[in-house]
Amino acid sequence: MFKTRSRYDYGSHAHRNQRVNRGVIIIFISIFIVSGGVFWGSRRTRLGNDRREILRLWEEASYEEVFRITQDKLQINPLDYFLLTTHGIVSYQLAVAQINNHDTMSYLDRCIWSLRKALLVNEKAKDGRIPYVLGKAYYEKGAGYADLAVKFLEAARKAAYNAWDIPEYLGLAYAGIHDYHNSVAAFTLALNPANDFEKNLETKGGEPPVPARSVYPQDLLLLAIARSYGELGESDTAKAYLLRCIETSRDTQVIITARLLLGGLLENSGDKDGAISQYLTIIEESGENAEVHYRLGELYASMGDTTRSRFEWRTAMRIDPTHKQARIRLNL
Image (tube, rainbow, N blue to C red):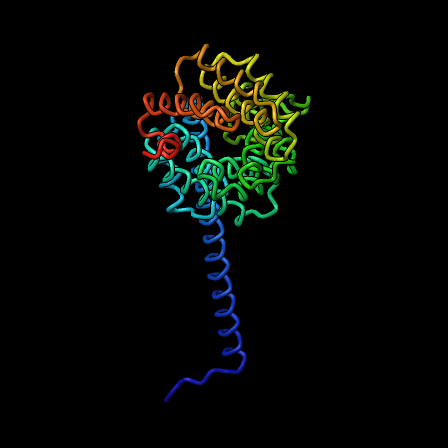
């Protein structure tokens, strides 16, 4: 016969089982918490070590190694803000150092992909480096991206990221979208920077610095400002900047370009003698120039001097047999 148990025995047995089960659960949870803490602590330590190593390599200008490491780490942690920003910035650094245009574009695409993703990961981040580098990357991509260059460079300024080369890039980007008013304003600031625009080269908050780099020397800035004023129809102001460029530049090609632009403005304003003087000065200072002789031919033709105009066109053809306008004028 089966041995009978009292209700008390059964209750006591069930109570003991509950205590055992609760004890097992508590032990399991404790082990899980401890092991989880060890895991996350180890992970944080590892990430901290990775970050220090990346910054060390950055300081040594080992950009290719930084690129490789951050690319590999992003395969494991694709949404890591530090890795995304660092990878994007180093991609830009490598892009501007390339000689081959295909390599440049490849790095620029990588830069844009990484930084745009960083913006999505941390939309509230007030990190002016990201729009700053994005703006410059879009400018380097070409004229078709000038609107995006303006968008992000202005965002960098709004975030109070005062890299001293922002006005230069903005001037070029605004000119690319034919907004010459803002182009002139930006170029003027680049030429005469305000006190709050300083070289922003230091590392902040353990992040890689973003070195600024000048796009144009001063004479080319003067030339760019003159072009923008010319597009706005403010020829007198354009002439003043061209004369300043001619006076200050030590680059022969820049001076030739400035005198050609100045000659064109003088022609348009009816000062043909002033235009001829600029063109003859180019020949005197820099030697024969097919474009100069072609323009002289055009001026003499407008003055009714057919003999001299044809002589100038033939001279242009002798210097450059492929000069299209001169060939058309001579019916060749």
